[in-house]
Image 1 (cartoon, one colour):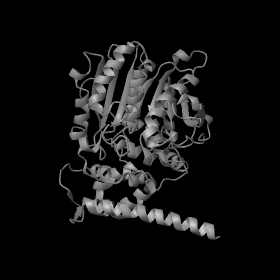
Image 2 (cartoon, rainbow, N blue to C red):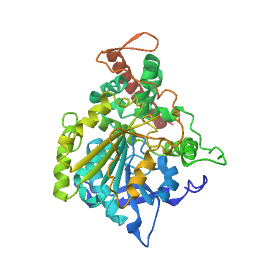
Image 3 (cartoon, one colour):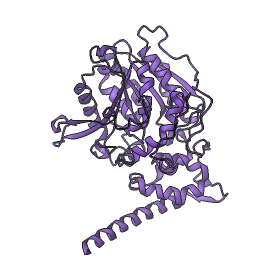
Image 4 (tube, rainbow, N blue to C red):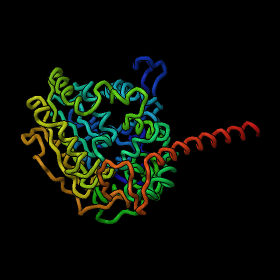
Amino acid sequence: MTSDQSFDDPRYSREFHLPGSTIQDRSERLKITYADYGYRNEENPEEENVFLFFPPLLGSRWMHIAKDDIAKKHKIRIINVERPGYGGTDEVQVQDRLQVWQAAIPALLAHLHIEHVSVGCHSAGTVYALDFILHHPSFLHPQRPYLAIAGAWIPPAQSGVISMRIAQSLPAAVIGRSETLARFMKSTVNPALGAGASAVSSLVGVVARTIGASSSVAPASALETDGEREMRLRPALMSKAYSENLHGMGVDAVLMMHKGSDDAAAGWSDWGGYEAYVPRLVEALRAAGRTLTVDAFHAENDSMVGDYGEQGPTWFDSCWAADRCGDGVIAYNAAEVEGADHDLVWSIKLGVPEKVFSKMSRRDRHDKHLPDNTVVEPENPIVESDNPIINSKNPVGDSENLLGSNNSTVKLEDLIVASENLVMESENTAVESENKVAES
């Protein structure tokens, strides 16, 4: 992204149509929108280091286009695909999303004549990225197989974050309706829990809607770094994302919370959870003749899955313990990202893209892995989140009654009942609107 006026660059709004016959039990074709930017070398495509990115719940293709210049510097080609229900990608039911994506991503890569990729993911994208690698390990580079996870999705039962446990207790109908849940969070949970509700707000993008995102771009300073420019452009990019379809956010939230009708007990895809996944991945990698380097980056302050060193990230790392990684088939390393929160852990300013892209672009690497307990150094001093409440820490506890910021006790059952009432209210409003249209 060489200038601030290039939002209409066609590289950021590509389309691919997946034939209906590609997916079992699906006759209609699937339109997929994606961004394809960074370094290109059509004469010598082997010089491109392809980075296939699986985005978070706010899964818009717009959110990382400010990384165009840093990607070019490291000869990285970024492919950021919008999942069903985001942007222009057709919608898919919750129970079919992972199966559809297992077929869609390889078909898109074949369409782009891409044979091998490095993989990156953020939050909800972790589940999709892991599912892709498990079922298609041959797409990993034979010499440089790499997965970068920043701000991993960690189920509330394992993270222990109270606000996320509240979210998981809500009915699937509420979680799947981001607009209804947004009103519920603003009117009911936020006043009761104060800053502790930030993670649930993040879950459905309430933060993005309430930070005053503007479609205009602030003027650049003379000595602006890549990281500073990304933060300056972020409100405009957020506005672009919210100007398009984001219905998939609610559906993905249902999937992440195991609230779908088919996955409540079985978990994700055909592997369940992370504990079962890692041994399965070892088997798949061995069968494909691959190894895999995994670098996990945990935010210092993460109100959605827990701060670095706390229950959630520690549990996630334990799933990748050395004795579970097949005697070197998987090399796993974890790092703290100082000054990062869950939303901004992939921001240029905090150092993860530079670390990842530098590692990908090294052709002859003897230092394959980040040292244990690496701390990712930010580009500049710590950047505060756009969301003023995201930096707060959530206590971990087992109490059903939660003490809010106003020192009043809030019962979980009351919150759930309130959310169900909002769903009914939303449905009644929709019916009334339809009746008015019919009468007119």
